[in-house]
Structure formats: structure tokens, C-alpha cells
Image (cartoon, rainbow, N blue to C red):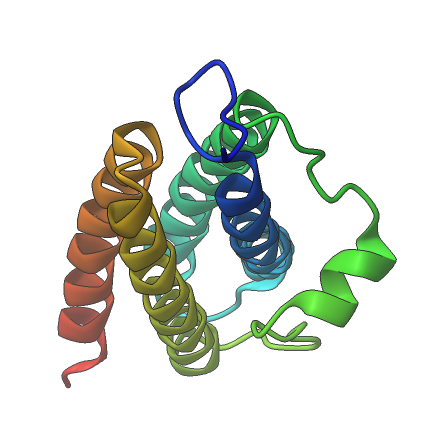
Length: 158
């Protein structure tokens, strides 16, 4: 008989889900750092709007990072916690030296798109396992990211 944890989920299955959640965690960390860099280094006519927007986005990303890590712990696994692991694992790439509104928004749209794709993978796994806790967490974040993506795309439409 298969071993289940206190949540009623198969231990073997939660291990695979934790690996995917750790991949999401790594992507979120790189995305977060990109947002910090954009916040600090933005220049030009849209400085005030984007400086504030990037702060809003990195604050939300920081909260999501914590929630993902705590979900991994709730599943009784260990969240990834080194920057070298984040960089080796992440699909989102570091973006250095970007200072213009066009470049930073374009990079943010790209980053969010990669995270959305990964969140859909996590949702599919969590659904298969009937893991409503992970589904709720990821579904809520996915909804917020999709709205942010819409707004950033509207900003880009000139």
C-alpha cells in the first residue's frame, strides 16, 4: 500500500510536485531580482509610473516566494534556498543593464509569461493529485499574473 502524508497525499507524488514547485520558486526568485533591478535603474519619462509599478510587482513577488516555499514545507519537502540553485534551475534569466521603459517592460512581460507557463504545469500536477491547497495557491497567483500581463501589454501598445 502506498504511503500517504498527513495531508492525505501520496508521499511519492508530493515529491514530484515539490520538485516542480521548487522550479517555480527558482523562477520567482530571478523574476523578483529582475524587478528590483528595474525599480532601481529605470530612467526616462515613465520613471515615476514604472518605479512605483516595479516596486508593487516585486513586493507581490516577495510574498509569493514565501507562499511557494511554505507550500513546499507543508508538503513535507525542502524549498530550494541558494542563489546558485535558483540560477541553474530558472527558465527566467537575469536581466542586467536594462534602464528604459520599453526594455524593462518587455523583459517583465517575458518573465511573467515564463512563470505563467510553469504555473500551468504545477496546476496540472496538483489537479492530478487532488491537491487543492497547491491548486488554490497557484490559481490565485496565476489570475494575478494574467491581469498584470494584460496591463503591461496595454502599456506597451503605443
